[in-house]
Amino acid sequence: MEEFDVVVIGGGTGNKVVLAAANRGLDVALVERGSIGGTCVNRGCNPSKTLIHRADVAETVGRAGEFGIDADLERIDFPRIVHEVTRAVDGKSRGMERTDEERENVTLFRDDARFVGERTLDVGEKRIRGEKVVVAAGARPSIPPIDGIEDVDYLTSADALRLDSQPDRLVIVGGGYIAAELGYFYEALGTAVTIIGRSDVLVPNEDRDVAETFTEIARRRHTVHAGYEATAVSQADGRVTVTATAEDGEPVAVTADKMLVATGRRPNTDRLDPERAGIELDDRGYVETNEFLETSAENVWAQGDVIGTYEFKHAADHETKYVVKNALDGEREAVEYTSMGHAIFTSPQIAGTGKTEQELADAGREYAVGRCAYRETVMGNALKDRDGFVKVLADPDGGVLGCHIIGTDASTLIHEVLLALASGSGTVGDVTETIHIHPSLSKVVLKAFEDVE
Image 1 (cartoon, rainbow, N blue to C red):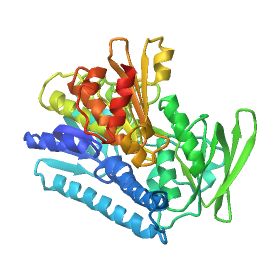
Image 2: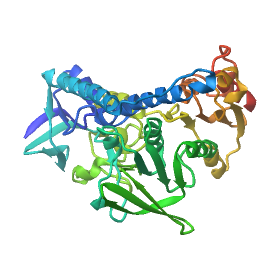
Image 3: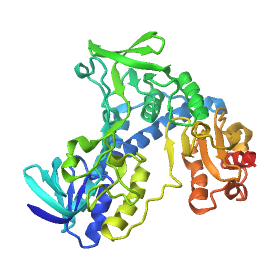
């Protein structure tokens, strides 16, 4: 059995723990069968947002006539777009792997791992043990038990980012952020997209006003069947048909060249046998951790998607800092999520932080609402953003409870609020007392916060 100071399971953000441990002179094992870089680099953020930028360019050209500019979208070279992005992503992953291999005190195990005892794993035909273990095994697409799904060819989000040819018609099962982003990408490049979602709105985890607005916008772009559950799928002549049913029993059938299943993600713990190491899971299969990111097993920490707190790359990066402090440096610093935000890179973009209005109402909290539409600002009008708005939720003392944005550059605008929460007093005044450049788009955030006051 090989002994290590630290064993890290997962080469996504876990790779950052590996390098931090190596820099401290520790003998480290990294267990990762797939490509180094994890979901974000290979199957998530990096390829999807790079591809989506191409969709943004296509949309800009398509809207040029609204601004008095004559431009035609004559041809889209879909294979070139995908191949360029894939090549860049694969190159980055290979570069990360070379960095690991060049470190004398890092051993890379390219196989599946399963716990067989306390901090002990079988990796392929080898058995290894770590004085300390970090579980960063990530998550993967969850496939629902739809009748016939095992007999058809379907895409997951990873597959949809690497298609060699563009489908004429695409049906997406699922109405969350992956459906929103990839539906936009394919539609902007010329594919006819149909989205089937169980909730009565798309992106249902967002604030209700944002979700309703986005659903209305999506209906202009796609065929949307919200409030329908996919019950059966079949394949014939190279095409897939999805049958879905509404709550009232109304059926709908959609036939397309390709089907994308985007119904959420599940943790990879079922592949690890964590219970044999004394690592407890919650009822959804995620690793349970305390505020120091310690698991129920001694000297075992966990981070990232596998703990299910916030399944964002930036959340995993944030947690890595605490795992390094607590696992490698012997500190006991509780992880802090006060300024955690998120964004959906569709068109228009969506971003948010904190509580939604529905969560506050359900909890019986007292709150005030501030709001400003993009069209009420100079830059919003210049951009012809007719649907966008910023919505602020605050307590009676001015403390920011939540902020939700839909519109141009929402993913950037939200950072003003995140900074106020992280480094300011966390109040409405942090924003309203800041001098905003006129007529920047950030004035829409200022006006929404002023509306609270």
